Length: 106
Length: 501
Image 1: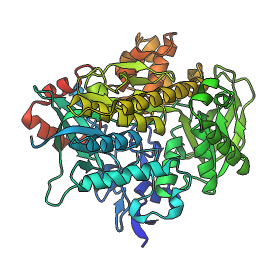
Image 2: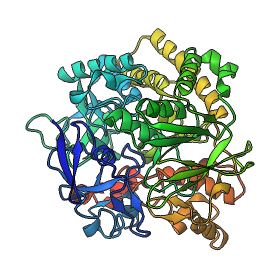
Image 3: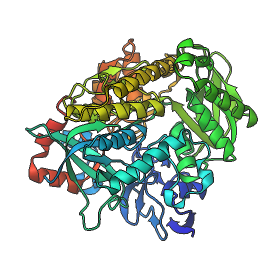
Image 4: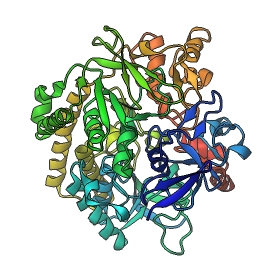
């Protein structure tokens, strides 16, 4: 059975077992967020959970790695702009997750 | 604290799988933690087992070695001798007064919190073990190049993972670029999936390891493997362009082309630029070992033949930290066969150190195999070095750090105007390596730039500040808060990163 996900009003099909990133790329979508400073488009880079370039909001939960999240039927992707308006750790309340450096500084 | 396991193995790739199975078979109670939802690591990354088709196996090496290990893992887990926890990452390791390790874990994704959980269990956040075998593997090593942050540029391993793990080709027309033998399976894998591979762009001169006596003699079978790739390149009509690098990735909002040029032995351009139209660029410069956990515990490091920072281990895979064993890429990039042998060896050492002596003949055989494979790896590293003059490729606006969007100009300014001589100061002043990935992607480049600007070769002192992290992965605030309830974060972080920053 093919899964159907939504991304910015577009329906994206996924085979069971594919990641969210794979489903988006297979649908011809190569970027799904913009960077905080330069407004640069970003999508998949390392593909294995290391680089955090592919962050996406999944069912309202921000900053999920699209390369690691398995696509599921009815999933809503990218309703917010993850990582676009906050620096990791710059504001704990907003950022939600935080990297080591900023914790060490805090 | 609940149950203290005899040994915790972190990572379920070739080294970790072998270590976990071997340790359990030696009579130890094993905890196996892995980020991925299923075992295999990057080398044996494969399509979701539940939905797999027979053809998903094509292109996999040593697959029977994996399936044998996986079968044993399944059996040992069913018998309760291995507690397997997929979909989780270790973000902090501390030690108590008795020397037991405490591992803080977090679900890798919002949907993986239930992975490996027995019914009725809460999601585990804190686990304990008397000994640790760290087998965190590695990931593609990257050098920045103008335009490398455009969508459509992937790591070589990323392009392959998307194919092997998700049946998805990342584009229609590709170049695979960087250096090393890994570019070949990535290129032929893409071609098999219907991607037109315009070229493999190899910075170094030849597939010289075929001619390297040390390599060929010490690793029988590797020559055959290389010939098979060569035949496959020929069959798919993929040009292999040596002594060539990508000078710039071009495109408006996504990749449209690359500009390539011939280079000399140091990586300095010698020929005219040439443009190749592509929508996918796969970049790989060898591999970077994942060192955050061993560094967090203060393990001694060394620099390997390929220039990477690695954990120093003895001939039983013991690190400088009592009770901490390391196997696989973290002790030096050397591939899956070596990783499996090191994994087994580390498990036998833990078992022996915990009163379950191993068959000495078996240990001797494994040690000999590891030594042989290390010689081969060193020959490969010498054949595919990073071009010495790679920072010459950078322009003022080239992003070095993708997360914090730090251009090369900022690093040069920090060096020239603010006197940042070393990598640590460069990082503090210009902020490369301070974003989400914590320097995993740009760490090597930042260390290399610090050394380049300072007119020296990249050394351990350049690499170590960029590889040390006080938390191994970004974690939800709730988990940090829970930690704070038991102890103050400052104390925990101080303890966790005692030999780090």
